Amino acid sequence: MKNFLSTNPDNCLACRLCESTCSNLYFKAVDSERSRIRIAETAAQPEMNVCNQCETCVKTCPTLALSVNHRGVVMVDKSLCINCYMCIAVCPTGSMFRYQGDLTPFKCVACGACAKTCPADAIRISQTKE
Image (cartoon, rainbow, N blue to C red):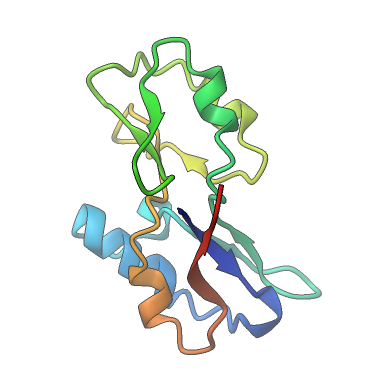
């Protein structure tokens, strides 16, 4: 089974509760720049940048700092990362991030905290067989 976040942008209220929950959980700060999910408001509907665990970044990493765990989630090994940012450059969903105060890229690990706090069911943890 592979875990990933699935989104329904039509339901998104752009309340950013998912961003604040994520940044608080992983960085102990409410800061959208530190969230592993990003909401961008557009004229039509909010755009949600969420990792779908496609593994494109894994195939690009020259040091094997990115790998897939037993749940099918792409993980970053900070000790192997050389901060080349190739993973950020190739990410098709724009969901590999770097915070200005930290050199190592980070991404969603499909923990589900954002889905639990979303009041509009715009984001959820899904599973697929692979």
